[in-house]
Length: 245
Image (cartoon, rainbow, N blue to C red; front, side, top):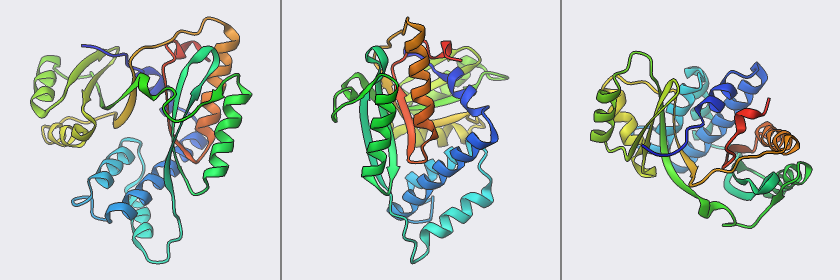
């Protein structure tokens, strides 16, 4: 086993206010629309769409919402035109940060990202400035309740997983990025369900913030990123994120 799970933080975010959950729905809706435009509206023939639909369901997005977004994105005359952009930078005391965005206006999103970095004692860097400290991996999270660890590990490795972790009240399965969907589907067919299943940036090392002001600034910076509809995900190597309240 290896790695460092952040599920407690993810779980806390999932339990946020209705307004925060509405933002999650908006962001996932944008991902669905982009996947449909790139590969068509049939998840059986569009693996990216299949992955995003699974993510939507894990975040309790209603099926009606999912179907409506797919139909709208597949319709002619839909002018929404989003593109993937990745930003990199540093938080307080050199915390490495990677931001994934889907935007229809690069200038607006870049300005918003730069503002958040500057406001809380960080700085936006150039492409590649911190990504070398991360690897892309599929991450599948399962609730430990009523699961046999040895059986799950055996099934996961048989399905093609590259690593298996036990952390608190969850199990975490790691895969190569392109294997995530297949491993998820194989385990789903065996009756397993997931709290989340996504391809993420996993840091190779973590940094602990010692100063209370750095902890507060880093936490507020992450919140500001999450409030943006353009920003889909934020990854970092902050060790003691749970110290931020």
